[in-house]
Length: 81
Image 1 (cartoon, rainbow, N blue to C red):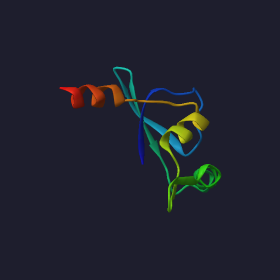
Image 2: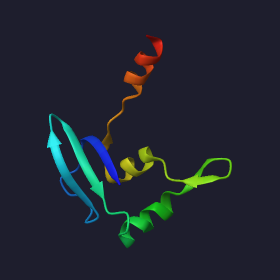
Image 3: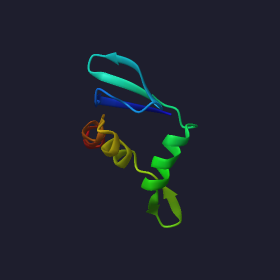
Image 4: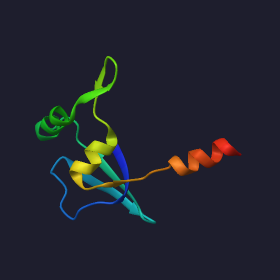
């Protein structure tokens, strides 16, 4: 699994690795098979919508102190054009 961030802490968990850092866009690869990652996922799991259990990317990024790339403004602008 990969996350794209604009900022990350200096120390990432062992299951997270920076793949690239180009022009302020940081690509972080998550080893989703790591047991430590699974324990965080279990802690963060919630009902996202009726009958669907999962973890919101924003919640995961908050715990990791990662600022996720937010392209909602781009999507909003594209929908208006």
